[in-house]
Image 1 (cartoon, rainbow, N blue to C red):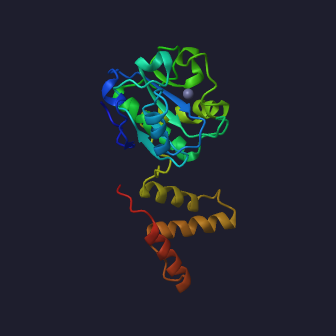
Image 2 (image 1 turned 120 degrees about the vertical axis):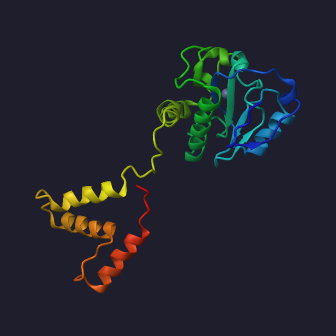
Image 3 (image 1 turned 90 degrees about the horizontal axis):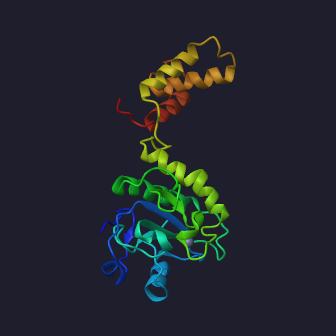
Length: 242
Ligand SMILES: [Zn+2]
């Protein structure tokens, strides 16, 4: 039994205890063709059908886990013996794209599945090939084929979700990380100010003030208003640990 720490645990019984153990090697994403909350998805599995997934994801990024990832779930036909699955809230004919919140959660879960279970960072090349996929990728993953999760989400899966899982799992920094240290920035800006290439007055002035704000070394002869402005910028800068 493995429970993803990024999800709310909403254990589904009797399936969680009754179903067989699996060694997960695939991750398969679905759209549930309903604009449901995690609670509603849970109730659907509990009360209406046995074709549950391990996870449920609402439009706002709320994520629930119903079954441990080393227990079989039944949403993927022939792949149930090896796949971790997720149902994602969608419109009634699953034609809408995932929200940004859903994409972020899919990426984080995908990275965790690689780290926790060693699912390889590729899109499945055959129905039994370890990797990442979406429900309609192989006909044997459903009964009689399926359009799930819909064309817009298949495009997002191939162009955004899977590449981002791969990028992060391979250790790329978060996009909002500062790629330069403070000393790098001081050097780059200092060189730009000194450069004869900076002929545009506005960009030279911008660089010059940036340099002063970064260093906190503000000349005596600037106006009080300017000094206060530069000191405020300097105080608001992140404190890098070089
Ligand atoms: Zn599906």
